[in-house]
Length: 400
Image 1 (cartoon, rainbow, N blue to C red):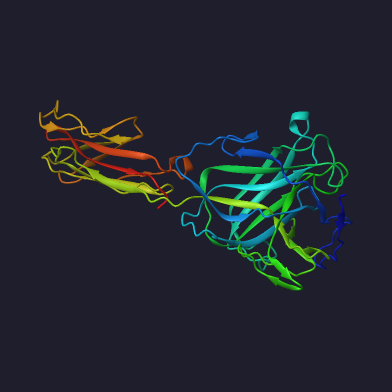
Image 2 (image 1 turned 120 degrees about the vertical axis):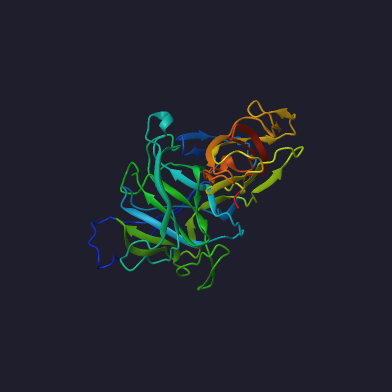
C-alpha cells in the first residue's frame, strides 16, 4: 500500500503568498522501468534502448542515482524551483566536458502518443553554488546549462501526483560538450506543468538518497551532499520566482533526499600529433599542434625549398598517412611525395614570406563525435615557379 506524507510550512515574512502557493509532498513510487533518450540537437525523443557506437568513452563524475523509492513534488506552473548542491569530481576526470546526463522522473500528464502534452520540466546546472542562495536571495552559482524539456513520455491518462503516474529513466545528450568545472555545483528542477487536480506539478523528480544521518547528526556523502538537518528530511533550496523562499524538509522521516541525476563527461583522452616524412624527399616542413576539442588547432610551414619571396599555401586534412609514390611536380618539376589519404576533413589556406608561413588556425568544435578521430595534414606550397608538397603530421583528437 502506498503512503503519502505531507508537510506544511511557515512562510518567510519577506513573501506574501496565496494559500497553496507552495507545498511539497513525498510519495512512494514504482522504480523507473522504461528508458528514454533525448537528443537535444534534433529534439528527438526515443523510448527504449538506443545503440550509440562511439570511439570515445564517458565517465560519470556525479553519480547521484542511488534512488530512494520516493518521488517528490511541489506546486506546478513554473514558479517553484528546487536546487540541490554537491561537489562534482568524484572520479577525478580532468576533461570537465559534460556530454550528457541521466535523471529519473515521473509524470501524471497524458502521454503525447495518446494526444496529451506529455511531461515538462526545466533543468539547470550551476558551478560554484553554495546553499541558501546569494546576498540578493537568488541562486549564487554560474549557470553552465539550462534547458527546458517538453513532450516527455508520461502517463496513460491525465492524472495527478495522488492519482496514477509512470516513472522513467531519461538520458539527455548535448550537441556540443558543455564545460562544467569540478567543485561545488548545483542542479535544479523547475516544476512547469500542473496535474489534473492542481496545484501540484504533473511532472516531478524521482528522489535519490543524499548524505547520511546517524541519529540526529548529519554527515556528508561521497558527492558532497549533506543533510540540512536530520529527522527533518532535507531536500533542497526552494526558489519562488527566482528568489530564495525556504530550505524545506520532509519531516519527520530520517532519509535525506535529492533529485536523482547522473552527470556524464567525456573521458580524458590525450590528443596526439606526430611528424611523418615518408621517404624524406619533401623539404618543406609542416608542424602542427594536437587537436583538442573546444580549442584552436594550429599549424605552420617552414620552407626547405626555394619558393621565391612569397606564395600561397593550401593545407589539407584527411584521415590517414600513406607512403605515397615519388612524383615529379607538374609545376617546377621537383620530386615530391603525397603523404595523406582518405576523405577530406578540412582545407585551410595561408601564405608564406619565402621563409615560413603565417600561422594556420582552426577551431575544433566541442563535440563528442570529434573525439578519438584520426587526422593527417599536408600542405601544398607554391611560389617562385614551383609547387611542392610538404612533410605531413598525423594525430588523434582528444580532450587534452
